[in-house]
Image 1 (cartoon, rainbow, N blue to C red):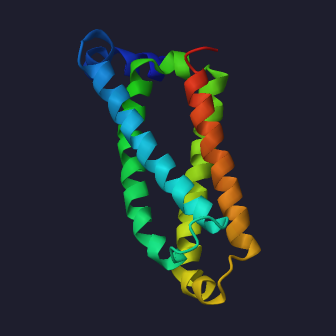
Image 2 (image 1 turned 45 degrees about the vertical axis):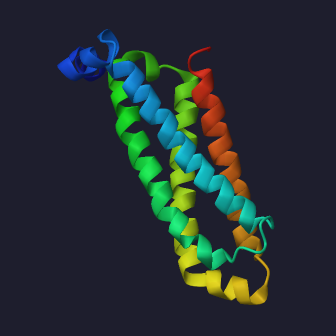
Length: 157
């Protein structure tokens, strides 16, 4: 816990928790990043599950770069918020669940991007999404939903 206590005592962490700017700024950034990544993930996954059929799957590839921007925003803001209360967060079951499912969600997003880069044109031609696409989409929806709910529960548990 020594390292975590040190993180909390840095000038940056103290700026976040003690001023009128730091915490609201980081929390707002975190909300925007969350909206971006979850919005992209849900749009992509709902298409893979059969909604929005007029949109070709290959046309969704551009969404990944937007999703990665959301993840970058959340990594920065999330680490900043974590630093400010590291000893609390590291013992919070809700936080640990959130981080676990964020890691799973990011891994799923990365793998889905690789699969779609390789196979989206074939899926468009066939007019159907194979079982792999459906499984990736379902898992992604589950991972991001659990991470959002767990993140909200951190303040209440």
